[in-house]
Each structure stands twice: as C-alpha cells, then as structure tokens.
Length: 167
Image (cartoon, rainbow, N blue to C red; front, side, top):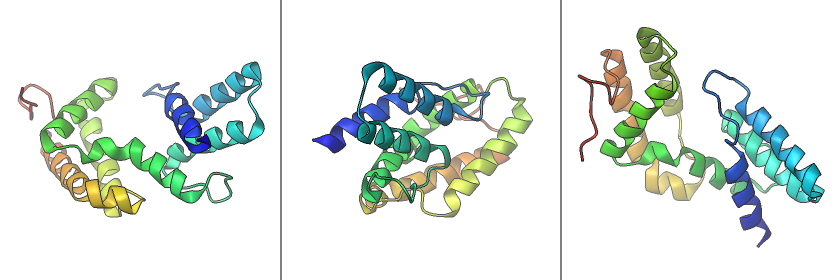
C-alpha cells in the first residue's frame, strides 16, 4: 500500500542527517530526500508526502496544509516519540545515550536545558493519536517527570553516580 511505502521512506530519511550541534537536521534530511528523488525520478506525490512527514518532525506538529492525511502524520510523529514511553529502566538507558550525544554541552547547562525541554514536552499530551495516547502516554509522562527530577538534582541518567540501567 502507498501509505506503508511513504512511511518506510520517511522513517529512513527523517534522521538521515543528524548532528546534535545543528538546528536544521530535519530541513537537511528533507533536502537530501529531495536530491534522492531527483536522482531516482520519484513522482511528486511520493516526494511531497515523505518530505512533509520529515518536516513535521521538526516541531512535532501535524502540517495542516499537507497532502498527507492528518492521522498518518500523527502516527508518524508518535512513532518518532515512542521511545519516551519505554519502561522506566529502558528509558533511563536512552536518556544516558542522549547525554553522550550532547557531551559537548557543559554539564550544568545540559541539566538545565534538558529539564526545560522535557518539562515542555510534558505540559501537554506527548502523543497525538488515540492509540499511542492509550498505550504510552502515562509511562512517557512518568519518564519525563522522573528524568526532570533527576536533572534538577544535577543527576544525569547513565552517568557514574547517576541512575544506571541494569542488566
């Protein structure tokens, strides 16, 4: 089916360019996607749909004037955020990996900014589709609160002396 094809391509390309120091990863990934489309002569409907899904991850919001139906965008965005709804231990292991990506940021600034970002995520519903809200919302909200509490104490998950994932 067409939607499955578009989702697969968007999943592959949405983080194909990822630099923790950059603020335009999604735009750069979309540009690389368009370059790929040009080289492979993919049709405009596929090109535009995948591009919209990639760009929707920039602000984690549905693009209103997109040709991609809203529910498909919601599922794609929820899949991108699903890691937040992992079981606590797995989430804390993930949070430790995020720190490694941002090791160039001084520790105190990292704790403050990451806590701020997570608090903003947790202010509303994290997931957009009813399915993901039902499956992962509660756990994701708990994970964010737990990590924010640690960060506010200067504890970074996964660090020596911090919360370690076991096993």
